Length: 551
Image (tube, rainbow, N blue to C red; front, side, top):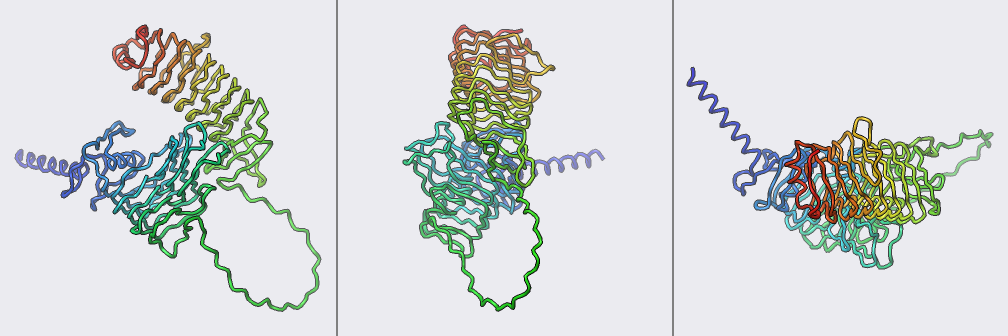
């Protein structure tokens, strides 16, 4: 009996090892690749989440990274641009109230991507740079690649997000929801709905700005070998400078039954053959009955509504975002909680849209409505007169350069719900003296300090790169229990900083040059974290008089 049990255990162990091999290496006949992605019976890597998409991109490009569960991957010596991938679940890049996840285009794909009828929703792409090319889910589809059976809904291909605005010398070309370019490839049965492919800006586009080869599906098809069929596009737009679903085509084969605009032209709408008008005998004129006043149609996603001197954009979750104010001379702005449309619908205002107040030199104070949970990128960038803003109690996300160069800002008070402070968010706020982030009764509260920063909360907080760069009046920073990440150059050039008190025992990352320009400061940390935090804060750009001590 003992021998039989032992044999059975050995057999089970072999089966488990075989199953593990099937799920972690490429099938026989191809180079072996260790991967977290499951491999199906047809040899396709299964993609079921954003983590899987990120790993797929790394496998194609030959890079390394980590997943949200802490597992890592490294394809620097075993990449596979010719890999076969299949979507096994719908994927959404936005799950309110969490921020949008920005996607960087996949480079050099030469393999096969089976969308399996699934939908990728809220794809967001916005890359910094003066010359932007190859914007899409794929940067380009290279020779021999195949893409089929995938749907894109609410894709937004932005373009320049550098915060400086579009410049005369800027160029945006080869942009589309699926791919910037399609080269000798086959694309079939792709659907794109409710999507935008255009450069976002503050309302001013210089005459010299160049937009070339921009379409909803793709911006450019280079050769006579590309085949496109079964394309369905609706409710979508590309830049106002060029029109079309595919812009630059060099002898591609395009399905004749598809609704596609080529080279900036839209196929003519068929004109029905007129029929003879029948002769109708006159009838007695009836007494007119007053008709009811027609009811206005309910708002649709993307509609812009103007009320009381401000514009709002209807969002996909039934709420709306604050877009702009008509009168830029107003010094004190109050954003309401809700607006009521002509159809009688009440919409909560949950977002301050990208660049809503950018470059407004007159605004001094702003009060958020109580439902606002997101301040998008550059929302108050270069509002040099802004002294104070009053947050909502549910604010969670503050985007890149949201308050960049607000040189008059002296006070920040943010609620305990805040979990993300974007790159260069408060950079160059040179008069900032006090900042309270996540203060609540359950935490240690230090309200008596001047020139101080307090960061607390009941959720995980990320302080992104350059978040407080050049806040030259800031003298004390208090980091409370839920802060996990301090980004690169987060406190760069905070020359008045003399004390950093760290209560967080979960701090995992302190970025390069996080303390560059800080020359005379004490970093006080929990006693049990003294040794690891000394390592964590070592060589972060600080001067020799910066020391780490225990509480």
